[in-house]
Each structure stands twice: as structure tokens, then as C-alpha cells.
Length: 459
Image 1 (cartoon, rainbow, N blue to C red):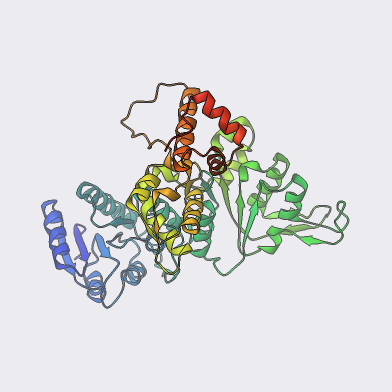
Image 2: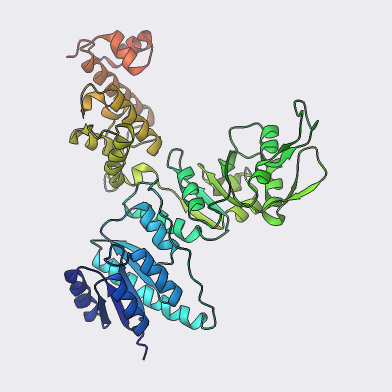
């Protein structure tokens, strides 16, 4: 007989199973245990539990495969996946395969108990609503290489959203500052989608004139405008059956927004200079580096287009909002640009990079790591190779710290004074070398030294 308060724990660590058993037992749950994937499936078939707590790394049968089989047998039983080896692809695959949620070990106990409570309630509701729903199996998870680095809670939530969005054909809007990795997010969605083997076309809406962008998207007929010497297929035609990623959608001209809205609503369009109505079957993923809701209020983005694009909204956090991911990103980029693995980054450099405010986000961090590896004369990267903007930058203020009450101009002057002083120290007071290091003219440097009363002979 089915007991809605039974929780099945599938984990190869006996100590972990006992800890969860004790914890949930005190909360009034009945706990069943399994030590490997095959045993977990057998218990799942026999018990039909209210909830499954499933480790990804299991003997005999890996957790993702177990999850897929459990969802095939009974899609209404929620499964919380946990592991001590979280990666972006694991989180995405777990959510794609139907996990209710994803937790990293060691997890916070209060968060764990709250997630369990919500999952059991969700399963109860699902069983009531979906009594007559047919059970369908999920596609097996894809074996792909990690492309997005992020172990912190903000990026884990992004991975979950990718996993939920990927298997659908729903339009996705990705919002984030420049350099946060919006294109990587779009690629991850496409890679895990049902259109994974179809074209993935990227169009930068801010990099082309209105005429060229219209032709790029919809194609043109011969003679449609000067230089149109032959018919050209547009991206919606080339990508038919696949995915179109519209980057910097906030820069799309208003005249083209109406045509894009028609594609979203009716799946039809015409080439520039043509009369033939064409149809397209594409999934659209859009991205913006601006506050798109403000763009709607200011009239830069059509309101009806915004609502069509904003079905699933993924906000990519800025790097300064997830400083815990900076050390693994440093390791990742060191491996990328130093395949022999001999490069070592000093703790002082990691500390400086972790405290920097990163206006250019992950793209800026990658650029700095690559440049330091090239410039380093040995295998150890020290603070001597840090750009002036990083080494002289004040650390990020904590949320509890009082706001700096100085004027913007005074803060800029203090920052300039600090950067110039560091450059002069590095060059033993040589103004020509300092100007070269700062990528500014010697005359401008001299004027700044005089303005800020900086000693030019600093050692």
C-alpha cells in the first residue's frame, strides 16, 4: 500500500543514508534506503515513495540513468538529486531529466528540510492533477563537456532553469551584463534541446545596420537594394527546424521588431523585396545586456514583443555577484591557455582577482588570465603581472559596509591617484615606462602627477 510519507534515499554512503534517516525520521517521514542504482530502482518499483533523494555518483548504475528510469516508471514522484561533485552539465542534465531540484553536498539542513517538504507537497498535487496522464520516457542525458563554470547558488539556479527550458520549444529571454556568458547559456539550451542536431544560428542585432540586419534575418531577392546581385536566404530560412539566437535584442530597430513579432506569432515572413510568404519552424532565444523592462517603458522595445520573448526569463548574474566562482574560473582559464598545466597562480593574485569588481565580467577575467600567462617569465603568476586596474582597485564593499559618501569626482580622483602611484612604483619612477604601462601619453601622465601631487621618484 502506498505511503505518501515514505522517502527513498539512494546513496552509496552508509553514513549519509543514516544521517538523512535520522533527520527525516525526526520530521515524521518513513525512510527507505538503497546503496546503489539497481537497488534503488527495485525499491522504487516496490514502494512508489512520496519522494526520492538520489545521489548522482552511484555504483552499478549512475544517478542520471536511475533518474531517467524513475521518471519513466512514474513521472509524478519528485526526485531531489544531490552530489558532492556538482558541475554545470550535471545540474543541467539532472533538471532536464526531470529532477524536482538539485542540491550540492554538504547542504544546509534548513534548506534541505524545506526542499523536502515542498517536494512532497508538489508530488501530492501532481498525482491529483495528473491521474490520467500517460507516462512518457525521457531522452537519455547527453554526454557533453562542461562549458559553463559556476558552483555557487546563483549559477546553480541558472543551470536548473536551463535544464527546465531546454527540452521545450518555448522562447527564452536571457538577461545579463556584457561578458557574463549569455551566448554560452543559449548554446547550452540548444545542446540539450530536441533541436540539438539542427542548425544553431547566432545573429547580433547590434552589429549591423537596419537594412543589413533585415536582410540577415529574412533574406532578400535579387535587386531588392543596391548590391543585392542575387537572392539570399535569411537566417530564419537557413535555421528552419533549429534555433536562432538573437543577441543584443535591445538594439533591434523598431521597424524590425514588428516583423520579428510576426515570426513569433505566425511563423511567417517575406524576404526583402519579395512577395512570397515563407514559413519557418525555429526556436528563438533572445539576449539583452540592458534592463529590458526599462527599454519597454522608454519605448525602445515593443511591449507585445517583450511578452512574446519573455516566456522563460533567465538572468545571468554578474561576476561580482558570484565571487565564489572566481577561483574555479581562474583554474579553468589557466588550463585553457596553458595546456601543460605548469602555470601556478599565487594566492595573492587569486585574492586580488576575487576582490575586483569586474566591469567586463567573465570575458574580462579570461582576457586578464590569458595576458598574464603570456607575460609571465616563469610558471608562477605573481601580483607583478596583474593589470594596474586590478592591483590598484579598492576591494568590493561588503553589503554591510556604509556607502562611500564622497562625491563621484572625488572617488575617481582617488582611484586615478592610486593607479598612477602603483605604476610609478613598478617602474621605479620612470615616467615614460609608467605611461606605457598605463597606455596613456607621457604628457597626460605628467599633468596627472602634477595635479595629484604624486612623487615621480617613488621606489
